[in-house]
Image 1: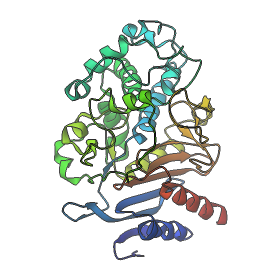
Image 2: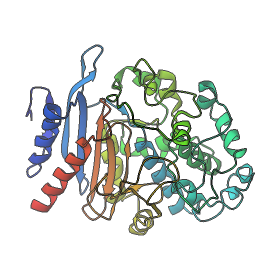
Image 3: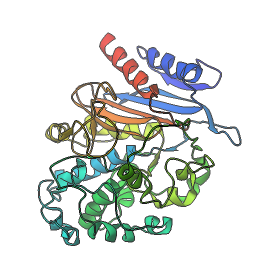
Length: 385
């Protein structure tokens, strides 16, 4: 199918509206390169891609082009954590110190694992100065977390943990399994499901990844200092881009290290197939039970954050962003997933047995509605069937 000179892929009967919206994002929303994939009941019904993967060379976006998906990484880690719960290896409501004893310093001894996944641990930013080399090395960040005093009394408030979430959850996974989270992802999910999804990009894939373009400048928007420290790991790297407009996560060393809260690299199909497998049979029984989805979609944090922008309706389950109109409407109250800086979105929904993945290379600004338009199109197609 080709609905636009640069748009390619396939759409099943009844899902043409998704193709229309995807094409219109290029025409009216400044899309440069992107892909969207949707599974329903384990069957791929939308698989579209197009535009330019690398604006420097003109390399086109292909069916196999992955992109850095930023905080969609958090949802991937949450799936990994829930697999361990289902295996009886992780109890979300027991103290972190059961798995990671050194975490308990400076008043953190009673923090349960669940608060790491619900942005309630009081650790969105670290006081210790860190270099980029420290951040890429893993252990220095873990040691900084162990020595960090919470910025609020854990459990009494929530505030998005933009980067530290990855080390907090990832270290628990590492302590339980003996594997870094990227390795656990490959062995437990990516290889069995055939995903082009990595947390720690292999060198052989280095030249396949889309080149991310900085979002449009938004002068005059104040940034909370704690939120800024959290996003940049205390200035270890610029986020999203440096003063010259270079997006930091284009750096091959950052991609290879797999920053665990924001550094996953994936195709749209990789994300959609992963979430489809959580809610329907894909290469075997569904990954997450209905009881697990019950737990994951229970709202744990909502309302105004301790630090950060005004509340726009986000609702957080355990590790996942939930159906959150008006800012991020999904398909309904059984939807769970995560968006990523610049416009990426991935989620599953077990009412509709949907897995959805959308990846881009032109980062959007605060009013970016590309992903929401696609989600709304999917909803329309499902309800009109």
